[in-house]
Image (tube, rainbow, N blue to C red; front, side, top):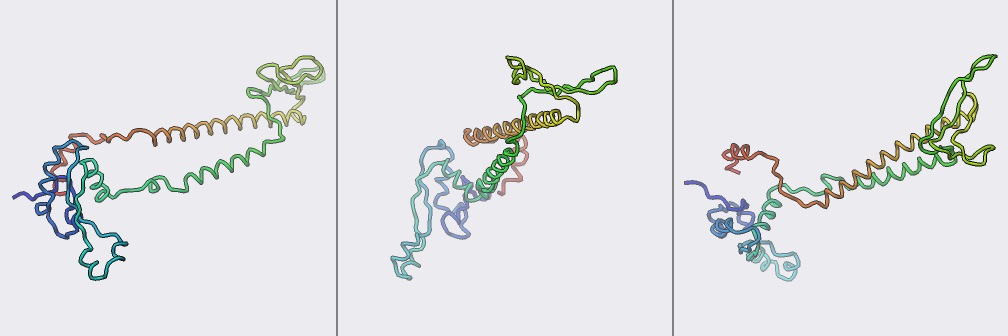
Length: 239
């Protein structure tokens, strides 16, 4: 004769606090079997046994407590609530912190503070407008040739030396001239800040996506092929 199992997959002896209780002997056996035909949110009544709360024990004598340690209740519930109860009882439930450690956000905050502190090192240094380039070319003179440098902006935005309007180019002189050296450092800083900005935009987008994932409606996962479930059904029948 096939062994009777709970229609909802409960551990009956745990639910009724009766070690060794078989599903066929459970007072909920017939109700659970019929309830599987109900909609997920239709209410049903099940019998459940619970331990009396600690404060009740304090109001009773020790002997009375031993007699009343277990109390039988009628549990009005639904298939949906039952499913959650069963999974929380048997499915090794995890917490958010087991997936995302609590110090994750603190580490993120610390990383942002560290980055902000590092960026203060750029204050008081030259950083050219975005798109600025250093232009190096050769100057040929009767006595010889030498490299010369200019700082070129994408449009006229530099303060003029003699002209009345903004200019697009600043002379930087030869390679070893401090004007050229500092301007080249400034271009490096410009590119560094652009890269940092890009990384922060990626991080910001990732956080926004994480928020969207946290807010998204939870739907059942259907990643496992139906064929696989059917093929494995016989091996799982004893679970």
